[in-house]
Image (cartoon, rainbow, N blue to C red; front, top):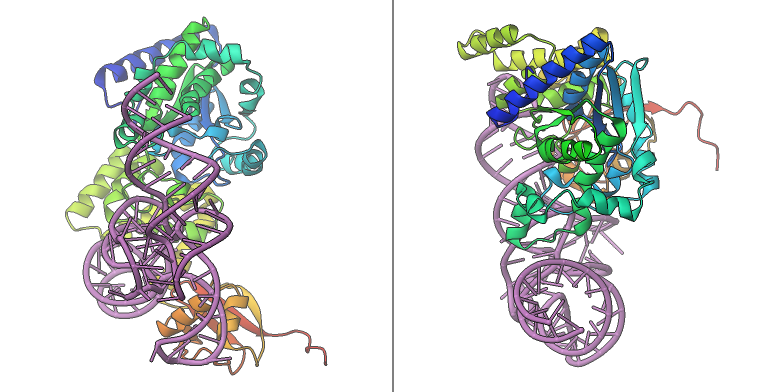
Amino acid sequence: MQGTEYGDEDLRRAMERELRERLEESQRTGRPLRVYLGVDPRTSDLHLGHVVPMRKLRQFQELGHTAIFLIGSFTSLIGDPSDKEKARRLMSFDEVMANAKTYTDQAFRILDPEKTVIDYNHRWLGELKFGDLIHLASHFTVQQFLARETFRKRYDKGDPIFLHEFFYPLMQGYDAVALKADVQIGGTDQMFNIIVAGRKLQEAHGQKPQIGILLPLLPGTDGVRKMSKSLGNHIPLETTPEDMYGKLMSLPDQVMGTYMRLLTRWTPEEIARLEADLEAGRLHPRDLKMRIAREIVDMLFGPEAARRAEEHFVRVFQKRDLPEEMPEYPYRPDQPLVDLLVDAGLVKSKSEARRMIEQRAVRFNGRVLEGFQTTLPGPGVLQVGKRRFLRLVASEKAPSAG
RNA sequence: GGGCGGGUGCCCGAGUGGCCAAAGGGGGCGGGCUGUAAACCCGCUGGCCGUGUGCCUUCGGGGGUUCGAAUCCCUCCCCGCCCA
């Protein structure tokens, strides 16, 4: 149960005991445990925050248990209210399935594709009748829901709480029933869904209640709030090793410990040593962060990609050299700078282009450019800010006469 | 269904006839500095061009009053509270 977090000693002890018993039983009977992790495709990206529970799932997988990666094709329609202080938009099934399209590919960066069971909860949630819902709901009181912090806050503030939001835990709880889950993995914000809703509904259906493994939440790039795409503080899995490395380097120093503990493959002893070195001034914070970034990129993309990502970072951000590779765009002698920046996609609008020029953020071959209507003397490297680069190349074909 | 309060830029929020492209904060971006795309400091943050006391679009939707509306009126939609 290393690395778990329950916020309540009794619960922790109970879960530890039950897990031990269930593992022993599994060993005795030869029946692997059914361990599941559910992820809602509210967006198209999985991110580093998802990696934490996925790695835990992978551990069970390696021990020979059945790992189920559940895609919340139905729960996503509502969205989990557990971690949000406002109601979420209802989504359409098509939208959700479109988002889910690459989820499995992304997940297989961590999970073993050969051994992972992929399932979708619309298969059973979509089949429930109104009467079934009434039965599920009858196991809970409104007070239990209102006691939850996120609903409590909204209630006190006079913010809307929609009735359908109460269905979310019922749905997730029923997932555990449908999957006959022995263990469910989730973040600490899943306490209610896993421990209350899931276990209660399983017992009501004559099943042994699942064991909840609750893992700490990974803070996002702001270093404070839970990583989430909707908060804009996420590091997506679907990106380049260079981008991931850079985003990791922009983390505030104070979350390095959390990242080491939750994401790296390092042992607690190694982490303790690194932290002691940091404390004593033997290890530079930047260097530690570079090691963390490299380790995480290595884990997800492999050692070679991690090495290249680090090189790129040193070259572009530390030495302020040009990146090895950059997008190309045809050079046109008559194209005014403002138009060029927009057409090439370096900025979103001409107004932004003008702002960038005014702020002396636009460089050509290393020299700051001035004047909106400036045209460039020839092919070369155009740069906006520190990280937007473009190689202007002579067109391969001469422009057709006309 | 009734009464009251509310719906403002990416988010939160101030503004209750002109000084409003709209305070302040957050986020984002840029510059400086650096140890890094941390921290810190400064600036920018609707669009368009002719960069000007410029033009266009924006304050839930539609309509109106006015020389002029985020602000007033009508109407519709949505949310909260209380009542039923």
